[in-house]
Amino acid sequence: MAHGPILLLAALFLVACGSRPNYDPLDDYEPVYGTMILDAPTPVEIAAENREALSRGEYLVELLGCGACHTDGALIGEPDMERPLAGSGIGIAYTNPLEHRYPGVVYAPNITPDDETGIGRWSDQQIMNAIRAGLGRHGEHRILVMPWQGYAQISNDDAFAIVGYLRNIKPVRNRVPEDVPVGTMAGSPYVHFGIYRSRGQLFD
Ligand code: HEC
Image (tube, rainbow, N blue to C red; front, side):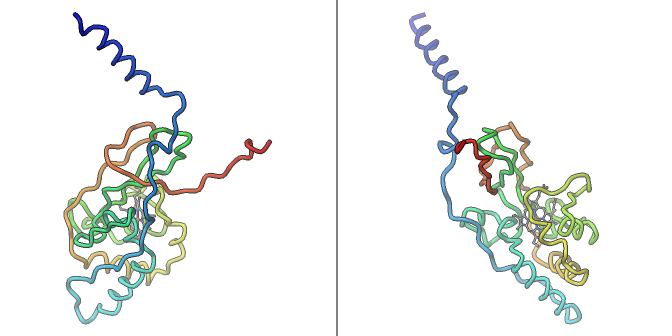
């Protein structure tokens, strides 16, 4: 019984914290070093007849910065180069932290040729659609965050070179966390991308 008031106070304190009226996003975020462009891994088997296309693919994947998001840890400057392009356990939030306490978050998936957790079972067309048109695996939504608009003009030859290259790197079994809808607390860490424009109210 004697613990009653203490428990009540503790509960009130928790409620008060949970519904802090003045949520300050700065309490939840810390600055980290930004993304890095990474060496693309070398293909595992290179038959003489496709050596040229594969090295073109490797060159493009490196140049287009796929590893900056699809390699775990790269988003915070600590890339896991044992598992390049095998997906990121660190997500990317795509909503404004000032607007939503719990932002929507996507985790760049595994794009190694693993059958279960990567793109092993995707058709060439599906992979190319993801890169050039931002179509998700079932084609029903636009991929968020990935700069596919910037990849839309990649030629067919280059797109095939990228696909061929991805099929010939080491498959890694690694499932990334599920995407997190806006308003839900993410169970894995994430970074914020994006620039939020002031609407000018501050200066009225
Ligand atoms: C800025 C980060 C970023 C960069 C750079 C990036 N991606 Fe992505 N990519 C993502 C995210 C995040 C998703 C999943 C997003 C979603 O489903 O909305 C994704 C999805 C994909 C998918 C679909 C895979 C799946 O399982 O759904 C493929 C294929 C893909 N990316 C390939 C590439 C390639 C190839 C490059 C380089 C040419 C690249 N990406 C560059 C972030 C990135």
